Image (tube, rainbow, N blue to C red; front, side):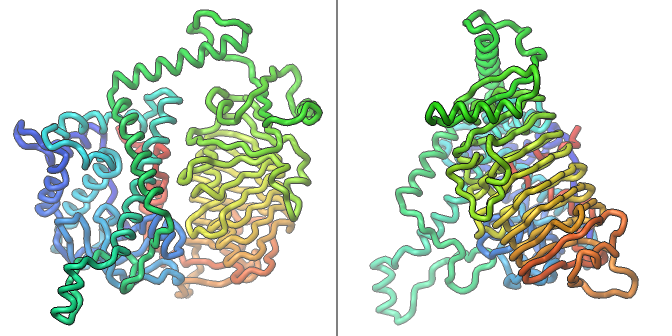
Length: 609
């Protein structure tokens, strides 16, 4: 089932937005922007009857305890133009475990019209193109704080071209690495805070007691006064999916943090200010490298950032002298011969300056980072501890090297190239994804990935198309999805334990290559051991889903790509295979939507001219 997708240059995006937000030279304040989009949508979108795919937002998946991304099929019963929403009727789901109300009020930008329509008289081409424009604008141009702008300021002249240029620069890697990292971090945090504010404020308004006037009306008329309720998607009756436990003071803290992000982002939105910021960062890095290499302060030289020898960074938390000496003895065994060694205080500081081929060694203790940039190619991240301590049945995290994140809605580590991680605990309880492997080969040994055990969308390791994963002697536990393999990705697993996950291993398409060496890999106490999407089940098999008990049974569907064996212990369901012919989406469309989920991580239309 193919959906409409569009590949456009950023110049085309700019012209499209200007066509919508054009008053023939008159000022368009921020308060009028949404009204202009409403008027445009009314002219372009069919009011009802067209089929579409609804990609359920992450926050709704969390509330309904659904895997993410969850995609369902249905049709639009009515477009609510004033709110840029639609009443969407669900007619088909990919997973039988997905239970949704038949009618759902959803945002238009969450809908992807399908190419095949039951009513060929509908102008769905124009509808899909209009939604694409709307989605790009509200995903990359409009900011959460824009609605607070003064009405006497021309929002279009001040921000439209600058925002689209910024989206282009981020996508094409035209900004310096530190600046791109900083701006992506700000954008991701702002979107996360916006989502939290919207739901928390809605919950607070739902929980407000009736006013005195309403009470009088109730007593006089004997019926409850009519109040406009906006049910959340998937809600039923008066039950709220997001009952907030945060006090009002925490809500105010979110508003304060949003104000800080706004002030900083508005400065960096200006191309001249971005250039000045990059120069300051570059000069600071040059001074740092010069001081480290010569031991004295001197005038920065442009030659300092050309190639340098690899460095082994030893990061140690404060401790007694003997403990530090013992750590250095362990580091001595791991440092490459003739390598330069640099002692450091924080992992965050090392990540900001490390280059390709650098090795990072971590002492026991908690190392907190807020890092959304790719780790460098051919480097490594290792803990200064014996592997058996990491894999102990009852591990004492206070005595182990632990990497965690201070950002509550991000990816802990992003890998883009060949990289090695060993003898570490990756604490992913406060992020939505542990490791995102974009490209290259990630080799992990003696590691433990720990999820929160509650989220229905949290992923341990995600392998994007073309990436390869090598895991040996590792434990992955308490994730919604332990390992997610996207099309054309590959993995070799040796003595890997996947424990207490909703889905242990997810094979998204038949081109995934998986080799579980020997039979030492195990899935323990998972609701579903292995989920295999889109495998051909042979002619005459009309079942949408097939349940299997042994990995050998799954190998018969794909003998070329599925090797090795594994065991299943105390799993509610062992293996489930979805029929290739029953897939909601064609492969190209499915991959487009899967890539669209990587918010804040430079995923926007990488094929654009």
